[in-house]
Amino acid sequence: MDSICSFTPPAALAPAYHLAEGQLQELSGLIENRLRHDNPFLEEVFGYGFRLGGKRLRPLLVFLSGKAVGEVKEDHLRAAAALEMIHTGTLIHDDILDGANIRRHLQTLNIRWDPRTAVLAGDCLLTQAIHLTTEIDDTTCYRSVALACRKTCEGELLQTALQGEFGMTEDDYYRVIRGKTASLLECSARLGAYFGGASAKCVERFAFYGQGLGMAFQILDDLLDLEGETESMGKTLGTDLINRKPTLPLILFLANAGAAERERVLSLLNKDNPTSEDLAAVTGSLRDAGCLTAARRQAERFVADALASLDKTCPVMMTAEQTDAYAALESVANFVLSRNC
Image (cartoon, rainbow, N blue to C red; front, top):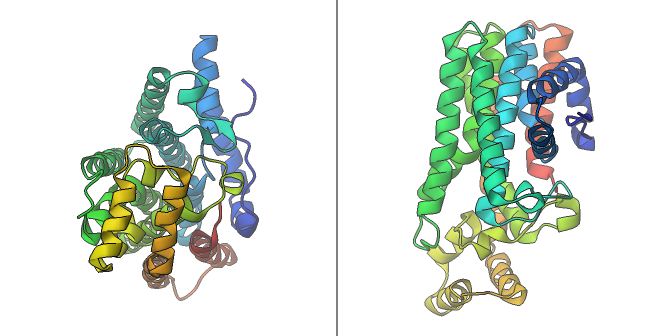
């Protein structure tokens, strides 16, 4: 199997990735080993599916959180690999649900093969992840990862149930993204601190940091779906409006717009086959009403709360590596707000 774990970290996060470079290399080796298969077709599908993965943000949080409170151990590595496998499996499933054609500048697995193959490949990654956690002699890890996986699926299922429900509230939206996106980032920071030997109170503050990052990450992802560029994002955009998913900018707009403007936007969204011009008109209305800016400000509040929680975990005396790890965790939070990919 050719290397499937090589990736280029965002320039803004290069120092953070460099700090965990050794652990990330070990992670790549572990994942490649676990995805090898004696059946060439299965090995090809697993390898291709993992090339569609993301920025290794969840493993990075595991390793940086461990370094911030102590040292990185073998358990960190297995937990990080399990979380990255779960994340990649959910991305494969997301692409099927969204009807996406491109991710990371490649055809999605459901297009490269077919939806049935993609569903099963995602399932295999999820079960491999759970298997990995059972190799850790600590049931806390298994429970935490299983709970995060369950919350992720529940968040996606809730979003599906609310599809086309344009009376959806902000609280409904936060409940969805707290499950589908924030739960894995929360688990990453939690287990990083836990295996690093942090106190129970400290572990919970790291978990809150991860959750805040996840909430902000999804809000920004939804904004980029509206106004991002396919070339820089490397994936299919505009799927939220096409699939009639109410995201925060639209929820804010519908809650505050006048009756005529509200009905005009809803008429465009309720078309059987809205055109690109229709979608652009909806996005323009959200922008003109200040809803894109308002959503971004909410993401900034989530990040500010996450950093405040992280500050409370800083020990009075820190080693040089701990100081670097905390700085890197702060840079990750800032990246979440500034990213365009």
